[in-house]
Length: 435
Ligand code: 5AD
Ligand code: SF4
Image 1 (cartoon, rainbow, N blue to C red):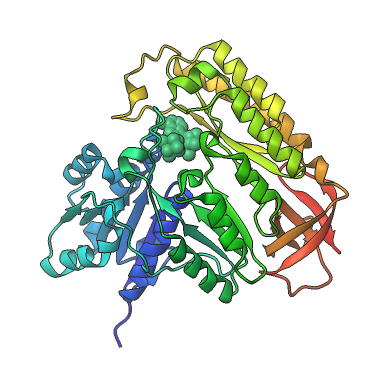
Image 2 (cartoon, rainbow, N blue to C red):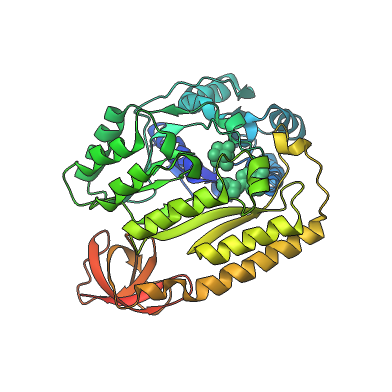
């Protein structure tokens, strides 16, 4: 019998890309590929790339360049680059010219054509590029999911917000929502298959059409014990109605990932974010009023063009005022084709790095005590596996999205919900015992 060919696939970037990666793996499995974690023994290597920041792109260029030796050893090796990065024409041109051993380049819009494109490479033995723009949604692609009991479910694709620093609207195209019925059917199937957590994905789930709060209510009504999480929310579109729905729900997570990006109204305006710091604070206050244990996380960019020390200090003040549970922090990265790329940028990269470190210190100090509010409380935890901190047999995540390491007499709990009484808070996790 033929030994099956082995694929090594690597996905960079956000959850939307990870979700695409699961579909790519699903299609490869249907084409009878097996999978390996060892790049050297692969017959097919695929990089599913991210374009949000330049250093992610540079890493991909480095990793592709390093394949030249393997391709020399094995001329039949198939090398594929896909994802957001190649949706930018200047990058695809550079890749095509610099790396003659790259066999297939395809963009985010033609994911569903992957098997066809790969066949063209194999049968016609020629290089293929397809970064055409077709903004249709293809349902029912095969999926090879990473987890047995957690599943990502994209509810919309693309982004119409055009934040001035961001390349996503250019590489992912216009916003389009899946039909609520397709989403409900998919989740019903997942719940039947014993999935305990579904994460609804979109660049801005709050602009899902016809209505995100209504979609949540419909998902909530699906029979079964499971948790609903979602990301990413955009502050300009997050309604009080949504927070009401969350507060009245049994299943929706009490974790809000709400990227603020900056604490300066002047910079928010230049970023084209569509809200003020005051509006942002008011949403957070409302969410905390209705769901006191909710965890709030965010994204922050330091060193946006024209940002001054005063603007930066306003970001620090906001961090201290809101006391985020955690934050993904980035130094601004100039992206070709975006509005911000045309703005004058006077702050040196050394200064930006210094500000960045200063911000990390402030966040770390808040992180030291942020989780103390959970001590003494009983949290409902989805057990995901064996403990990580060495201070508990098991680990999981609470409804608030907090990592919980805990001990339990019942050991048949992986992939199940457990109530855990919390007795200690660490920096990025809490500890407890199942009740
Ligand atoms: N430079 C730095 N950070 C960026 N992000 C998006 N674009 C850029 C950029 N050009 C960050 C934002 C966004 C997160 C996913 O990545 O904070 O919320
Ligand atoms: Fe980029 Fe803004 Fe869209 Fe998020 S909302 S993907 S930051 S343009």
